[in-house]
Image 1 (cartoon, rainbow, N blue to C red):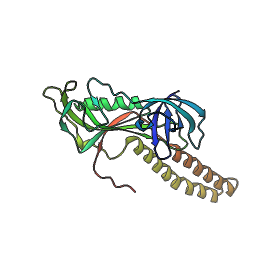
Image 2 (cartoon, one colour):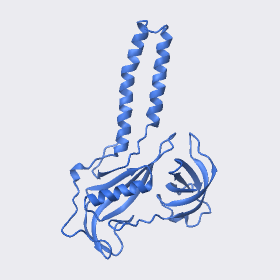
Image 3 (tube, rainbow, N blue to C red):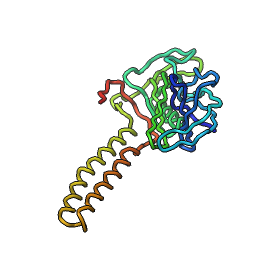
Length: 250
């Protein structure tokens, strides 16, 4: 089977592997894997399933082989390093990052490259991949972030007379997909604050055959909203500008 490494735990010597085709996550031990110290998040890998995933946790697998991602693009240079080999940096943007999200790595990467071309960026430095998973949800959200720059060298050169044109005023502080999740959760809470008193009032007025029915309906509404609250997850393909300004988190 083929998958993508989405998490690495060096202390406990294991990695998590995500299969985009089956939307399943597996955990594999790094013990005995050759060159496991070179493994990074985003690497392609071949694995063998030993146990299927459950609702509460990932499945189990054996990591057979892995290889580093090959960032090959003729118009935009991509690298995990702070600079691109054999090229000199003309200009960098330090106030924001270019970011993209998607349901799998290649989709996410293509969205990031499209955004870079839109703003006449020919290099994406400090490229980082983050994979967001939620308990009970099979699918995963892939997110790339990178520092935009203009470089010149043997392979990549800026467009003649064209510089980077990044509208930093449009930069946002969070992920669009995660913002939608929070929005849906707020709507669910507002719904409960309205629906529960209404059902209780209807029960007190004798709308239902028995008062116990209003309690059953309220319990069902609360359970339903809790399930949606925990499982709601968006993975829309989109690219955006991410600000580097401090964000206050609770």
